[in-house]
Image (cartoon, rainbow, N blue to C red; front, top):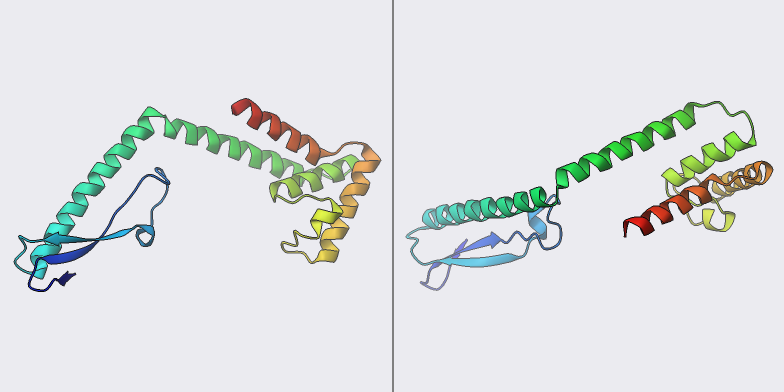
Length: 173
């Protein structure tokens, strides 16, 4: 807060905007800042009180608009569906992780599900770029084991999963 050269009190205010992420969590540091004059303020405390009242009014308006958009497009229902699908996916991954490895097919599926869940492509050339928590040798070894298991059983779970996701995205677009 500052006072111009014998002019009105100027208060630094944040301008919340829903243009980028209407349902996101907002951080004040990301907002543009404006210097709002309060010519009717007699002191710094008056200017601060007026700025606080104005900010509260703007936030109520902003939250009201966000609520209307949320109800119109059924955002809660959509989020509940996404959460349910995510939980189901986690349950399947947990069951696969707990299943015993009984052959090459089981090994390929386990490695494929783990890699797909971590966004890792187990092709040896690409695996070297995705070191994550492994060094290059360990990632190359994992990719080699996966490649061997896939060639032995004749089934590539990662390519099937990616194909299913491509079809899903194409159908939803």
